[in-house]
Image (cartoon, rainbow, N blue to C red; front, side, top):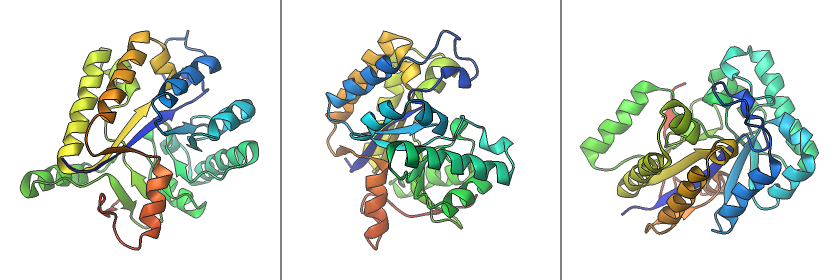
Length: 274
């Protein structure tokens, strides 16, 4: 077994599910239930990163300040915008408003970004780099690069991690490694058991080759069905029991990676052509 850095991340904390097409209209903001999801993880002493739209931070500043004492808060657009649909100037405004909201409302300077709908493009990364962000957490969009990773694993018997420097920026991509819960439950129509079985296979694969395991969740997705929360708790218990799996926050990994002066033992630095 190889060492694995594992990350539990939530998108849209305290945010309206109506921002995402195809979600039942009955899904509303239920702050106390979002907190219950976090509380179940805190009982397991697992660090969490919350990617939150700036407008949500402005609407619930006290609540976000409360969770920010224990968890990392990172940017997720301002109103959950599709970044690919925006011009360079419009994207820059979204990034600025999202960053300002977190700085002014909770008194922290976020270093991480996840694009709503994983919709980043070259302009997005250029702007984030200019604003001083240190990492993004998106899916890799370069199909040729994905094929290269698979071939590398087959030929050399070892996989590469998903932490990679984005070309022509100062950003690192802590790549999401599994289908998120929205994809699993609303797009693939999987059951909770089948979803967590898929996550377990992904984690076993990461343990075999080494690298990162990044899980993307949404509180409102988990809340819709109690069986999903139960399955999530069972999966996290399984993950904690695996030898060599360490749960940390992306900003902590980035801190080590940026200041080590050499590639981390558990990560390989690569440039991704955007």
